[in-house]
Image (tube, rainbow, N blue to C red; front, side, top):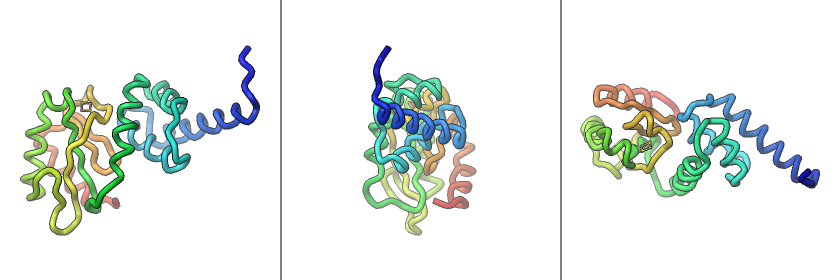
Length: 167
Ligand code: FES
C-alpha cells in the first residue's frame, strides 16, 4: 500500500473537499468547468494536476480537456476590459457551428468589433479558445457563465441579461 505522509493526505483531502463544494455550487455539467476553475484559483491560488484530474472526474471530462481550458484561461485575467466580457469560442467545433455569425450578430448588437469595448465601458467583446462546451457548439462565455447551443436569435437576450447582471 502506498505510504502517503499525513500532511499530504490532509492537503489532498482539503483540495477534494474544495472541489466538491464548488461543484455543488456550480452544478455538475460541462458549463461548470470555468466557474469551478476560476473559484478554485481564487481560493487556492493554484490549479494543480491533481485538481484538474479531480475536476475532470467529477464533470465527466478528460483531464486533457480540463488542462487545456485551465491553461488558456489562466492568461485571460490581464488587460483592461469593460464591466462585462463576452468571449466567443472560435475553436474547431464552434467555428464549424457558426461562431463567426454569432460574433457578427454580437458586433451589430453592441456597435463594436471583436477586441473592442463599448463606449460606456459596459461590455468587451473577445474571441476565446475552447471553453469545454464543444458538444453544445457554438458557445460563448458571458463573464463566467458558459452559454452553449447559441443562435443569432438569442444574442440580444444574452447581452440584455449580461448588462442587467453584476460583473
Ligand atoms: S470548440 Fe468551442 S467550446 Fe470547444
